[in-house]
Image (cartoon, rainbow, N blue to C red; front, side):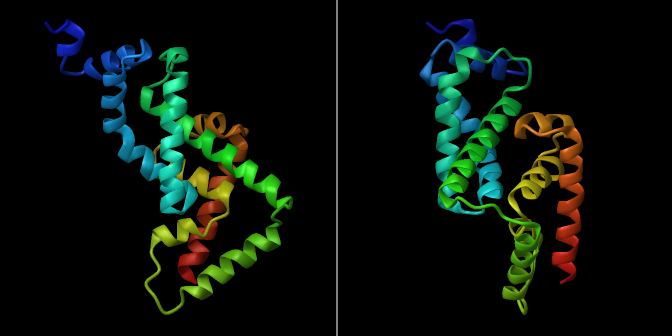
Amino acid sequence: METAIEHAVGDDAPDLLVERARRRDTRAFESLYREHRGRVYALALRLTRDAQAAEDLTQDAFVRAWKGLPGFRGDSRFTTWLHTITVRAHLKNQRTRQRRAAREVTDGEIETYAFTARRALEGTDIDLERAIASLPDGAREVLVLYDIHGYRHREIGSMLGIAEGTAKAQLHRARKLVRRYLDG
């Protein structure tokens, strides 16, 4: 016999799924996974610029979500919480790679990278996705979260562990680089 939670439909169904998953109901979590996987993958792809890395990040985010779900208090929407997990997992992976590389990227190297990417694409159709992919990591992350996913600067700052003003500055920089890239 179905319980009221299992039979729920309408606006409350997502909240009930989250509540069931918090209580370690794997079927409820599978439903949440199917519902949110595409959006998490799209965010991961824009952050990583690599299909395989995006797939890995998506899986990592859902594993982390499953582990952290009992502590989810519902202070934010489930999707916001899941996107925050995805961004933080990406940042952790990025820091690990950077430590391995044991070097910092300077503004001059960033400009050189953008110029090189632009030159490599000369003679082809340059679209917005390529322009976004050419951005340095911090600028790309803020642009994707603000302009594509609609988060506010305060939320982005919280997700990325940066000040709200830094998020605004990164967005301004990202938009400037995208314009420069597209104007080529």
